[in-house]
Length: 440
Image 1 (cartoon, rainbow, N blue to C red):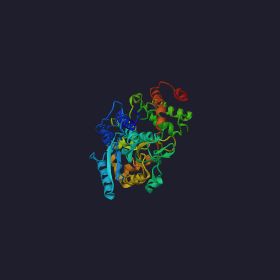
Image 2: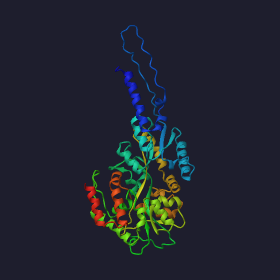
Image 3: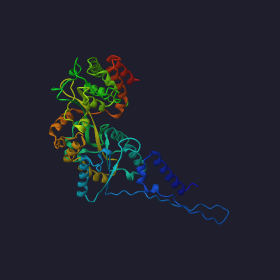
């Protein structure tokens, strides 16, 4: 029975099976033709014992038509404009302003988890294959998921000159955060950076160089020595101009920078500036708590951790430098455009420029506890003292290495940091182990 009916039924069955297999229940909500009852096929009449061919029957599935005046925006739960927070209210007001100025458009706001089954990347992948009509116009994603989406061909490359002139002042780390294999696939939305926190009533003048922090009898500096991603060692290595080679399939480390960074950890452990109990810390939240509980004098934390609480007894500063220039690592969120037509893209740009407006970005990031990605947005902060410190930190920031690099070096750097803190081996031996592991 090789006929159009059978092929249509098989195609419909395969599509339903694929959607259910991915667990993307929300796609089913937007695909009415997948929720209807099975089509009724009229029985074939016969007039003789000879079986006659089945009449040609055409099955038509009601695929949702794309509404050219409907813009779908995917947001993570923390950015929900209906969550009642000050930041949520500001975003809601900005979206309302867009609707007032562009009455011809309707906005469809969808809240999705950043990661995991049914999350942004998972759903975007499934929708792109099974139901292109429900792919969002704009999506705001964490940098790690954004990189995966770009590499999987799910996002549109963009030309920054097509947007407002404000984007020319993006901070260097923020602009670099949107590049994947040298191509821009999004626009920075907000950031975060590692910094140093301390209590000014205990520290009049914080140390400004790493070597000053590892002298004998110096105060304790807390950081997560057991961080699975090995970010402390990554930070020290990169701040010594250590790179990872130009081949995305193979990592090559700078041996001198690797040894120097491990030596600092070893010397800090010997001086008890990095005590053994740091090897029990796997998160920057633990570093923050150790400062608040006075177990440490300094703590390496994310700026967002400080901004979430902003206790009067604590302040923040740039990270120490090896010589004269501070260096830190940054992460953040990116506004991107899933694959769409050129005509629709022009419409999505209108909404994007409202979301990237400096005045809105200034108020929203301050309320949200994130770093602005432009100098103009920093100037909108009401707390100019804190914004001045954060702006200085942002100017020294560099984006985290890409997903492949972190997945390869993270476990190795993590183990090496633990070995240095626990004095289990020498920095030379630890360095050699890392280089050998990467060469195999």
